[in-house]
Length: 333
Ligand SMILES: O=CC(=O)O
Image (tube, rainbow, N blue to C red; front, top):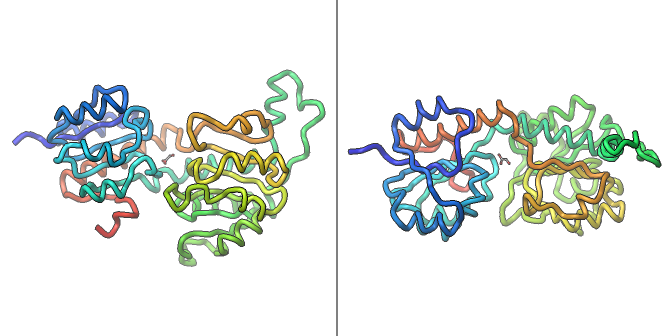
């Protein structure tokens, strides 16, 4: 019998040696030729990937395949039993559609925590201090700008509200403590004293109403889409700062632009957007907000760790029939 197949959606950029040792040695790796979703669907139907047991996919492979939804799942080879996603957030994969076809999905937790929380802290500091306006003025040859930008705010003594206290949220809490911030959080369930590190567990409403800085660290799914919208902005402390390194669509971007205009929100620091790479013009035109193009895990060390973690899932699936880090929805399967 030949080796089992592995479908590579996207590419390996860093951990080449490990890919050769852990995957190529035990599997026959197949790469799609398709350059669009339509071509990918056709290629699947042609039987080109038959015999593949697992798929390794990257966030960027979305540009070719689009969502791994019912339509894609329906044409994946019958042999395919595992999809290993290289990323923490797996909103590009319809877990329900995968479960219905008995496909198990894994993601990459933990390896992303430090780099994403670092980015999150950078956005908190930059947005609180209002650095973006002066950085733009300097590059335009105007020093701080005229008039000079408003004075910023210190993190010390501010209440940081973390919405979603998973690995990234908890990592952020420790970093924020070093800057003198106190953390309160809302999560689907209250964490143990040890995990929460003494952060106060509050209701969603209290978090929204009483945080000086609100950080969005929850996954995107049908329950969290637009969890922050006009109604929530109206409840917030006037002058709140909002930071998002999770997924753009957990917040209603148009509502944020309005809340910034009205001054309900003092500033924002964003790494993610509703329709990446498109950004709401109301954000682009607002020099006060600090914007990054989804750089949360964009470091050599973290990207390498993530690739290794993801291929660990592929290897484990092939050798033991089990994923190391199955997604939450399939934990008990
Ligand atoms: O956005 C990055 C990730 O989900 O890992």
